[in-house]
Image: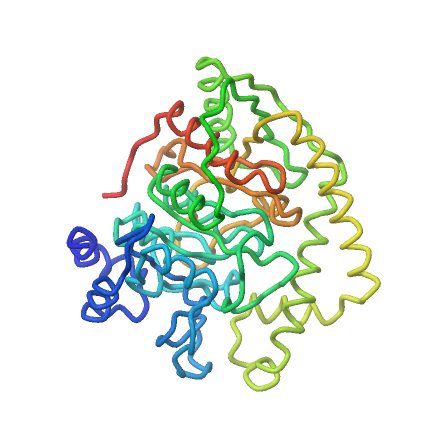
Length: 398
C-alpha cells in the first residue's frame, strides 16, 4: 500500500484518476480487509459502481450526494475475497463518450479513453492493483489499450451488475484492469468460482484485421501483423480469419439498442436535468426515443443469430486476435476514442482480454484484443497469459 500511496503522490496531480480520495479512509478500509485469495489488494472503483458509505456521482453534480447504503454486488464479492476499496475512480459522464478529467499517464496531452478512464489510468500508474470498470460498447478494452494495461470483459451475465448505474441492461458488463494477466487471472478465477484453466498447448489463433467496420490505422494493423508473426514463430497456429458478413449490421444495431435502453433509463433525470446533459450523451438519448419496439425485436433476433454464428466460428480457434482500438490514444481530451473495435464482442457477449502489444512512434501503447466464445472466460485468460509471455511486451509510463 505504501508503494501505491507513493504512486498517487507522484501521479495524481497530473493524471487525475481518483474521486473521493481519502488517505485515512483508505487506511482504515485496508486494516479492516480480511484474508482471502485477494487479501490486501487495493481496488479503484469506477464512480458508477456503488461503494457503501460513498456517493455514486457518475461525473455529474445533480445526483443526490447520499452515500450508497450497500456495496454493488461485485464490490461485495471482492471485499469478501480480501480486497479493500482504496478510492473511487473517474468515469466519463454516465459512462458514455463525453470525457471526464483524467489524462493519459503515458502523455497527459492525450486521452486515456473511456468510459472507465480513471480505473485504467490508476492501474497504469500503480495507484491501485485492480481497477473496476464497466463496458457497454468498448469502455474497458479501449482505455486498456490506450493506457497500456490488461483489460478483461467477462462473458455477459457472468458477474452481477446490481449496484452499477445502468446504461443498457442488455449489454452492460462489469470489467477489470490489472498490470498483467497473472493478476487478472487470479482475480477472475476467485470471482467466477472456477479453477484456473491449465496452460494451453499449441494455441490456435485467428487474426481478424477486418471487423466489418472502418479499418484500424496502419500502426495498429502493423502491430497486429507483427504479433501474429511473433506468435507463429513461437509455434502457435496462426491464420487470418474472416468474420461473418452479418457482423456489419451489429454496429448500427448496437447503437440503436443502447440508445433506446439508455433513453428509458434516463427518462426521469432527463426530464429534470436535460439541459445539463453533455452533448454526445444527450444526442444519443434523444435518438433512442425514436427506436421502436419492432426495431428492438429485430435487433435482438440479429444478436442471437450472430452470437450463434460467432460461437461456431470460435470453436475452430482458441482465440481471435484483433485491434482493441483504432490506433493510439487521440491527442487532446475532447475525444475518448472510437468504440467500434470492441463493440462486436460486447454485442454478442463474448469474453475479451486486451493486452499491450507495442508502442506507437510517439511512444503511446497499442493494445490487441483476444476474444473467445461465451463462457470460455478462464480458458481465454490462460491463453492470454501465454500470449502475453510470447509477445514479451514490457513497458510502463514514466
